Length: 188
Image (tube, rainbow, N blue to C red; front, side, top):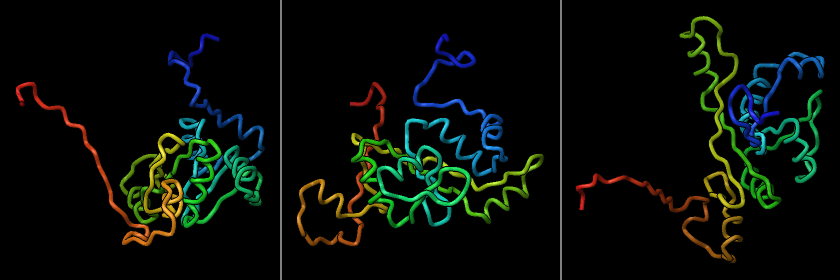
């Protein structure tokens, strides 16, 4: 092999997904949500996807295997490997996966079912079948960040804070944003 796919250089972080082959092997049709998951997974193959479905984060296929092996999750019923957890556990689960050496992507629903209905109404041709979802963050040991979904205790433990009561005990805290701006050459 020349290490390329259709003229594109090979990228080991990605995966070429043949949905027809998956259907042939599993003997069942791929649902629109599964198609959406495989589309995202094909671009983030080296990453554990936490795929938002309602108030839960779901893990499918090899990601579900990781959940069972490293988080003591149980496989849910169904033909395909599948596990998950409620959104309140996001911070704890992410911290454990990152500590175990995984790169973790949070895939959020970026529209509501009502917005999907409106999008269907204004779309001609093939109608969309599932709410939009996008990768909203990718974290690893070197890029660990904290947000409102994280457990404040995890942040404090990482920074050696012990039983410190602060105004941010409610999970809120300072937000720092840095933006790099190129100045014109004539600027001082």
